Amino acid sequence: MGLGSTPTAVLRDEHRLILEVADALDQLFAVEPGGAALDFDAVDRCITFFRLFADACHHTKEEDLLFPELERAGLPHDSGPIAVMLNEHEQGRVFVRAMADAIETARTGESSSLADLRAAADGFVSLIVAHIAKEDGVLFNMADGMIVGPECRELCAAYDTACSRRFEGQSKEDLERLGAAILG
Ligand SMILES: [Fe+2]
Image 1 (cartoon, rainbow, N blue to C red):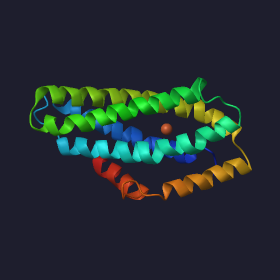
Image 2: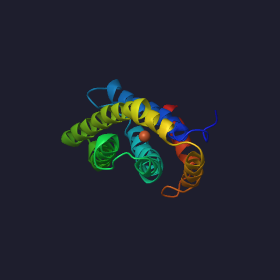
Image 3: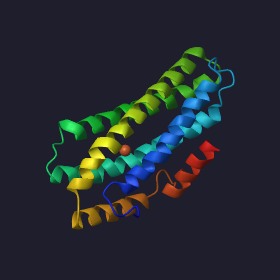
């Protein structure tokens, strides 16, 4: 089945790369617990990837396209799985902003900033792994059953349009290349 054949295939595909980069971020911190050999440039690339690919490109399609379609099909906005997912997206933004805020001073060797950076990275990785498991295992299965026929085709066309946007000047393909470069 192609990525345009179900209401969640494109999103599930993006989840795979997000999880791989989350694992790479986790490993960057695991290599040297003292932080002396932390690869700040690689961490910085992960921050950019999560901000632009995971949030601007991916979460935006969920929030602006998939979730409203699920609401039209009968799911509530302010309770249940959509409310939980929206709340977790916001928690993720807080963690990514905290990483961005801490990294420059952490680079200079400031130990409390390094601790903040590590805590935000740990928090983000734990959050996104659990979050994607819930979407892939629960909400997206519901969506696959609820959004069919013309609604499904329209949603997939809207994903294509959203994916062809630029995210701070970068295409989705640029960001996928960034993810691949992080994975080495
Ligand atoms: Fe997602």
